[in-house]
Image 1 (cartoon, helix red, strand yellow):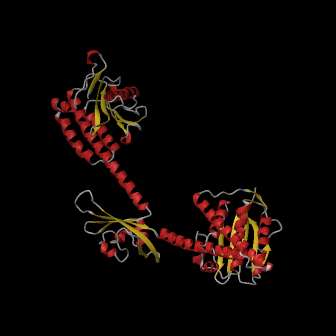
Image 2 (cartoon, one colour; image 1 turned 45 degrees about the vertical axis):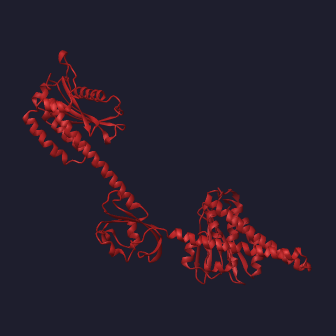
Image 3 (cartoon, helix red, strand yellow; image 1 turned 180 degrees about the vertical axis):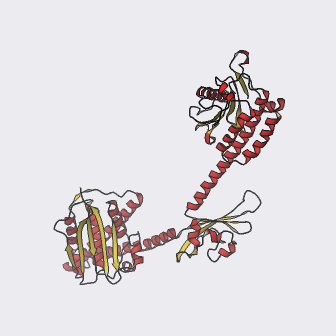
Amino acid sequence: MIENRTMEGENTKARGLPLAEASAGKAVRPEVLALLYELPQELGALLDSQQVIRVALRYLPKVAPCQVGGLLVEENGDPEQCWKLTMWVKRPGEKNLLLDFTQRLLDRLRAESPELKGLDKISTAVEEEKQPDQDAVEARGELASFIAVPLTAGKRLVGVVGVGSVEKEAMDSNAIAALSLLAEMVGAAINASRRFERVRLEKESLAAAINYMCDGLIMFDQEGRVTLFNPAMEGITGLSAKEAIGKPIEELQPLLDMNIALSPQELPQLSEGIPRVFKVSPSVVGKVSSRYRGEVRVIHDVTQEKELDRLKSEFVANISHELRTPLHAIRGFNKLLLEGKVSNPETQREFMAIISEQSEHLTKLVNDLIDVSSIEAGRFRILRQRLPMEGLVRGVITGLYSLAAEKGIVIKVELPAILPDVDGDEERLKQVMTNLVGNAIKFSPNGSSVVVRGGAMDNKVLIQVTDQGKGMSPETMLHLFKRFYRGSEAVAQGGAGLGLYIAKQIVEAHGGRIWVESLMGKGSTFSFTVPVYS
């Protein structure tokens, strides 16, 4: 649609003219046509829609006799977002002229598509001619002639382009046809630039996803040469992308067997020198078409999953043993007592003591399993209150004196005169202390000692438990607080491998920290902190 408006009487009219009719029925002046023939080449080199608009703005006064011109275009290809009006004016300071021109462009756009939204959000940019000529000075006044045509990107309306003059009937049929032709070229250029922008953004998003994904990704073309090698793949193979890209896939076989299909395989991890387990998933590029274009292989590190499966299997076997042993003892001694085969009262009391001890062991084991289940399900709760830490520590140690006495172990307590109260859960912190002191007794040799120290630091109470055991290797300390983990000595001593894992969860739930320091042959010191009550 093309509109030609003047401000007086019979010359004030609006008429519609299809683009094809405008360009075919009304010839463009040869000198203007020559200018417009240069426009596609200039627009074709532009990849940004704002650059396209600025170039079009420069051509407006060349194709029509005007003092003001502009393009009202939706921003970012989104009519719901906002619109941008870019205008050119021949004489600086023509505010009334610009306001009138702006309103007419808006009216023209609304007439073209009444359902458009976002027209209340318009940003404006004005380019003024640096050195206006005398004709422009004499021509100062109200807008008398105005024409505007729609801008379409593909088949979609994206805006309008218009020009205006203070001269009556300044816009003849040549100007209308020229503006229509310019609008067709600019609309096509905006469409191309926005398609390019969408492709660029999609490419950047894909590149970011590939670069930051945890899995390794390698792609090679139909000739078997590597075309993509992401950072995760660099970590798996120890090769940089620069070294890998362009190489035949056969050269990477010693590092990673890329012919492996979907089943997990143990593959070498050369960059760290430790065995890893990977799942390699291949996919053919160009499945839709019949032409083979290469392959993509995704390499997922399943080492932790495999290790967890192994630990779970060991745990099931271990927990079965831990449950079976006390149950056999309870059942056996109870059967002897029920059948009256033990007549000696002292022996009966001894058997009942064993049954009680094994029952307590079963209860602790079941409670540990319940705690782990609560932790995994997110139902683990801490009931905080003001708690005298000194009384808690001494109470736990008193309860373990008999266990220490059986091995001739002396428990030494080194606490300051005043140990601050803590903000904690009494039963849970007793559980931590019992685990640490009980382990220290278990792993210390007969006739040795266990030292329990305490103090305050940085608004936290620090508790340390030191044993005289064999000590631990750095590898053991690295995994010590993981669920199901048991060091070599712990395996010999028995246990489900849950105590320290639960202790860590309890301490961290209090806002504290737990750690271990150890040297082979020198024993170990377990330390944890709990916030001071305030």
